[in-house]
Amino acid sequence: MRAVVVTGPGGPEQLRVADVPDPVVGRGDLLLDVVAAGVNRADLLQRAGHYPPPPGAPAWPGLEASGVVVEVGDDVDGWRVGDRAAVLLAGGGYATRVAVPAALALRLPPDAGLPLVDAAALPEALATFWSNARAARLAPGETLLVHGGSGGVGTVAVQLARTLGVRVLATAGGPQRCAAVRALGADVVVDHRARRVREDVLAATDGRGVDVVLDVLGAGALGENVRMLAEGGRLVVIGLQQGRRGELDLPALMSRRGSVLATTLRDRPAAQKAAIMAEVREQAWPAVLDGRVRPVVHDRLPLARAADAHRLLEGGGVLGKLLLTA
Image 1 (spheres, helix red, strand yellow):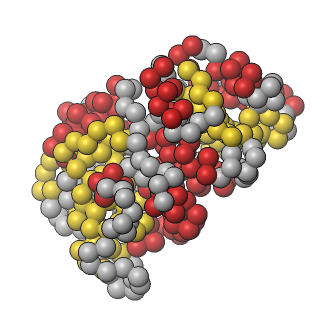
Image 2: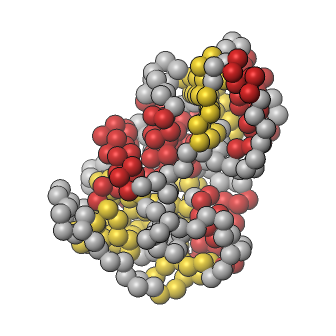
């Protein structure tokens, strides 16, 4: 099969399409002919040599894909050849075929109204938001701040949080992106380029702050995030776009009786990821199938243009998710 391999740590020029061995279908697995793969910031880190794939995962990038089932492994119930699926992967999505545990697959019925190509934009974002919302004990009636509301995770988080009865605040950069996030259902969108995020969030909550912050920024936003928490608020760090090490104002956190959580998804044990996807399948995927949550796709590029996709994502102008089509 064909896959986009990383020839060595470095920039997008290190990506090239090559022939690689077909995946091996194990017990409990599905084999898919891939139609598209999502491009995520973790892929950029892997290409640069900072985020190696976990043991047993393919060497090439790709944390999510969509496609058609062409083989069903032993001990798999409820799936058959020809079924359409979106899948969460530990790696290897930038390819024409993937093998994946059936427990990490989401079925896409023919009448779902969602193109199979675009479904590749969803598994990673759904699993990321859902697992972190649960970890933060996000509850109906609470207020959530989504940093990076125009990103791949953010655009899904805004929509899915609204289905949970949560008031959603989000940040985005510039009037056009703010308008796009507002159209997804965010109650308040703050333009982070104005450098008044904390002031605007506190104004929008009558000075109370937010119950949960979903943060992709990391160290650079640590202090401001703590100061935006309401009493009992929870800061959930899922990205490090503004740095790895920061200073935590413990008195500010203590006075709010707040907490800080930090999670990853890719390197979790298989059983944990299967449990997360079981909840996504049961409680979040129906919102996709009935149209309440839809992927926001910035562009669809062929596998041979993976380097261009990485350049676009690094450039900061992507709204939603970039896809590579097989």
